[in-house]
Image 1: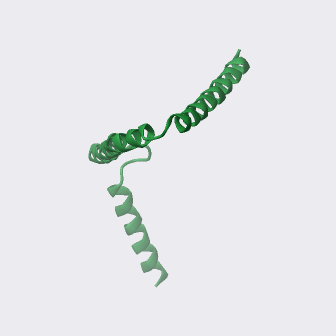
Image 2 (image 1 turned 30 degrees about the horizontal axis):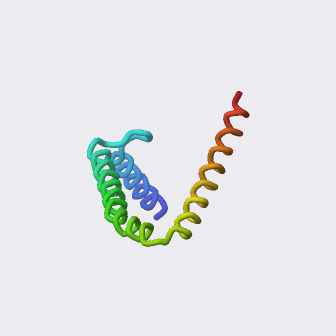
Image 3 (image 1 turned 120 degrees about the vertical axis):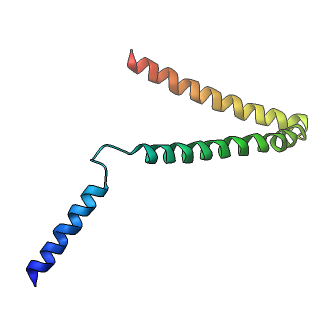
Length: 94
């Protein structure tokens, strides 16, 4: 009984190893499939962003002057924080 089970296991492993590409190698068909999936996901993301811009812009322009000023202050604070982050990082590299 055990011999039959082991033979069956060996045959299954052998068939499985022949059906797969060697480690680290991907078939051209699989690469094309992955490329297509990535391109579709990227196009979907870009299209979603482009379609959201008019609504966001309309919402921003609907703000009164004081509220816009608050938004600008927030943007300026974020820009300064990022600039500081990169300035410190560049200093550490030197």
